[in-house]
Picture 1 (cartoon, rainbow over the protein chains, first blue to last red):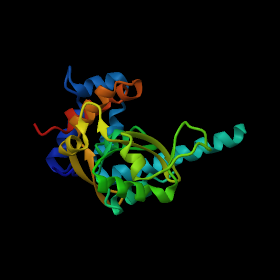
Picture 2: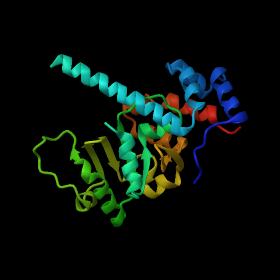
Picture 3: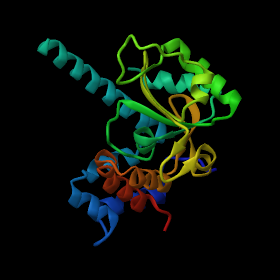
Picture 4: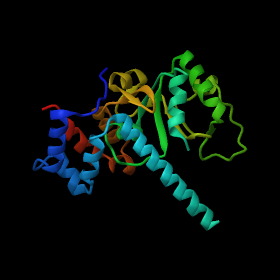
Length: 75
Length: 159
């Protein structure tokens, strides 16, 4: 079993380049056409898996607190 | 909701599990926010005991059922089912003994990577297996994630 590591150096540069300049007919281009914001993916790939998790956990908590506030306003 | 604590609790209780679903996608770079944790767990008897004990302090109850419905949370209940959709004091967690498109816990393990997250070392489905699982699940919410996951796989490939 491998370990999910941060992308670094050449590996990161290659991934960012593929997201910045999608290959015609490829999956990245399909994602962009589907509406995926590739700049957000680029920002995530610059982070370690642990940083990605912490960031998304903070976002989930913020979304939960907004939902709670909306529910209170509606009550 | 405190999914960080939920994951830490499972790790500290030495539960054998693989993170699947939205949080596995997040480890790989997805930007889909999710408020629930999906795991595939080993049905080994000792693991069921550990899993039951790990979640017990956080009062697991079945989602979508009336609050007063009797529900005994223990290893026997776990042994009698293969899919539990639960609410706990720490948040929502779905427990699956098998993953569509991937298979049993052992097969999920074979298609997983180790991840350092939330201060712990855990296992999560690798990106190709996660894509298979989403395709096999086939629900609109799973299919919506496919373009992003396939794009991430293409972008991060070693070639």
